[in-house]
View 1 (cartoon, rainbow, N blue to C red):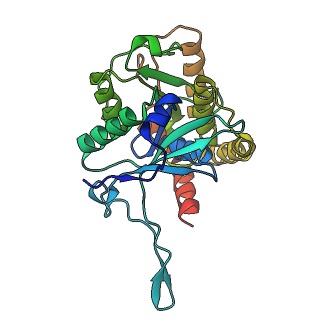
View 2 (cartoon, rainbow, N blue to C red):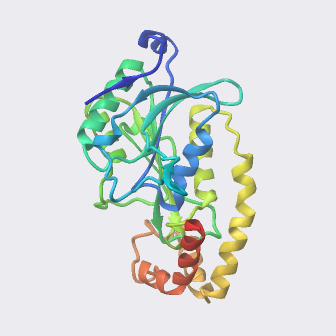
View 3 (cartoon, rainbow, N blue to C red):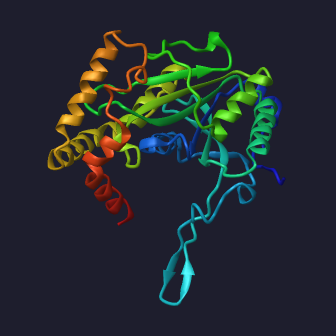
Length: 298
């Protein structure tokens, strides 16, 4: 596999000033485009490319076709997908590294091994993964976060639900798993995104992730633009729910959330009978999602 190193700084210079790494991939853990929006707001104009992966061997182009423009009689503006580790600074100059781009479809073990090599070479003290998953939660309540880590001491906030479940893995979760085997420190924040917003942009979810990583790493991030997008997004969501008579389903989710928040349930998954299913939500809000996807394509 071809490895591209762009940094002119030597690895020992990074080791003298350890820089944390934030991982936000576009793939399985990107419900509500949470990780994608987070990555967009973590990128800065003065970014320095530290490492680039050979994405051509990892991406399923037929499943995720990159856009290209046809202009009169020829093709222009091909948007080449890239998977890079870049170096940035927050508003007060604090540095951090960002691993962002499409989640690899192939070669997960090679991706994890290469990332661990870079982490070790640069002396990264902590890797923080960001992601979002669809859950039975309402958009009218504060977003919930689930935290995990390679060592119990790294998990500094209590999860609101306590359960053991078997879930589909991802390149990002495999990376953390392999880092644990190598004795490297890594944590992750996963925001719970309402089922019915899983396939549309949901700025509230991205904001929750960025506030969490900013607090943990002591970063001063510019989140004003993302906060400004929230009111319009919420208004549009509520209008569409009203048009599709989805208030009853939403009310059920609110009741479930409130009971859970008061400690009457151990897990959002503990009482499946009282929790509206994904099928029920899809039935109530199918037209809403269809409209949103049509708008996104437009």
